[in-house]
Length: 286
Image 1 (spheres, rainbow, N blue to C red):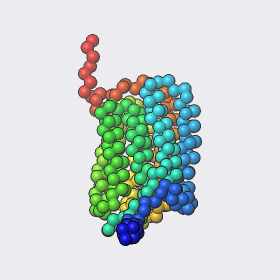
Image 2 (cartoon, rainbow, N blue to C red; image 1 turned 90 degrees about the vertical axis):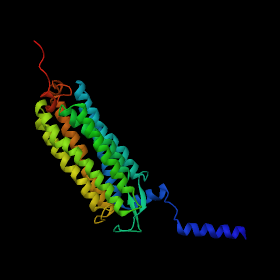
Image 3 (cartoon, helix red, strand yellow; image 1 turned 120 degrees about the horizontal axis):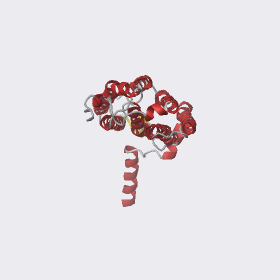
Image 4 (tube, helix red, strand yellow; image 1 turned 30 degrees about the vertical axis):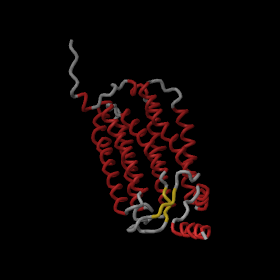
């Protein structure tokens, strides 16, 4: 009798709480969606080519600031190739049941949470490179880096919250507030520093490329499966992948091309002096 009761309880438990998908099953689900799978492998290939190209471009850079910009930029495709390999293998993907109020409430949605890990590591590198290019100081660079890290972490919380539909959007709102902080540094403070540093031309190009592409991420989140589910998971993934190509590989190529061709100008920049600081520097005694 006890054995029968235990068996009945096991059957009941399985019927109420479905077993979590194994990594092999998630991997197979990715393989079965050719469009989704292609969005991962396209970036793996481009990241690999970018790493080889960027190593070649930076092989003769001597100046310390220029080297630091190069290292920060090189880390972007290095992080990306690791992240996209995790997505393609099913390691950093989960199926989560959407909460009541969501467009597909009660259904399981494929959540690519590994992307947020990529952004939490790669976007700080982008901002460090931009801050150094602008000749900005440590405080402003630190503010931008912590802001973008918090933006990515709270975005991850929005994607993983299944307890409440409202809480998903509240996390999304918090993430957007951190994004505005980053934009303030990028669009208001650093352009002034770049004018003083003499790098305003290339900085303004990269600033606009970064701002425009980064605006695309919350838009895709809101329209995609994690938001109102207007876009399916494969289209959402390709949207993110295209933005990554523009915001990472194209950005990095433009930046490193400038650094390689203008290393002497980079070497002549004052360390940590932006526009806001140079106005307060006291003149030296005669």
